[in-house]
Image (cartoon, rainbow, N blue to C red; front, side):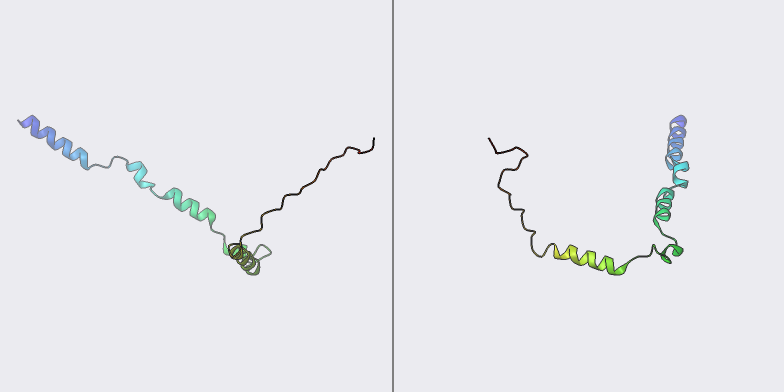
Length: 88
């Protein structure tokens, strides 16, 4: 009986311990690293490499207009083309 109670106590204590302490200590590090790598430093905006608002506005307006009216389907070109000679 005592062995059974002791065994239950050991199992209960083992259930409360963290299974992956090494992984838990680094949880989220990869996400924070990737976010930091995607962010541009403030100095990057002060040069020829700056964001062009007018170009972005034009691109977005063309994108929105592309949904207003469907693009015309290309017309099939009938005719024979080739490099052969018709002379006999």
